[in-house]
Each structure stands twice: as structure tokens, then as C-alpha cells.
Amino acid sequence: MIDLGAPASYLSLEKGTPVLSRQFQQVGTVHVVVADEGADVFDALVIQEEEHLRVALAEEVESIHEFGVVLALDTKTCKKLREPTPEPEAAALPEGAVRVRLRRAWELVSGGS
Image 1: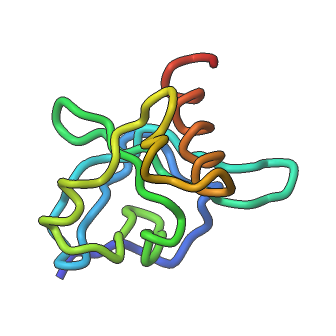
Image 2: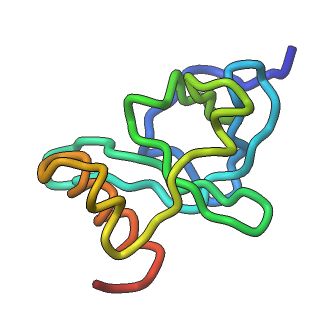
């Protein structure tokens, strides 16, 4: 079993922290944490997966530790996480919180709007 260290806050995550599937297989590394700092709310992680960036919403994160993040998804599903885009899956998502979080992820990785 991989030693992930003690449970930790999203505030302690750094770029390059390993991200694992629920089978404890590494599926990427933390690229950026998406959070509403004013409300102290963790929204999502942008994950560097080889050549692609993927977004895992907060509800897809099982646990955060000192030395890694475990997603609540199997390895195969992790490979299918959405990529950050300027207009996230517009047809597939209702207007609301999920779309706002995905838009915020895009803004963080693209350097603006």
C-alpha cells in the first residue's frame, strides 16, 4: 500500500502532488486547485495527465493526504474525466454550480477568461 501520509486539507496541495484512482494507481498529478477562497470551499482539481489536463470535481475526490490525493473513481473512469474548456460541455450541463466550477478551472489553467 502507498503511504499517503496523514489526512490533509486542499489548502496544503501543491502542483505535482500525485493523484491516484481508488485502486491506488497514479492517474496524474495536481496541476491546480480550484477553490472559492472567499468562502473557503474546495471546488475541483485540475489534474495533469501525461499530455492532457483533466478536471475532477470535489465530489469525485475521495480523500486528500499529505503526499497524495485519492479519487473516488476507478482508473478507467479517471481517464475519461472532462478536460477544462472555455465553455464546459454546454449542451450536457445545466446552468449552475457545476458549470461555474468548470469555468473557474478553465480560467485558472488558461490565465484568464
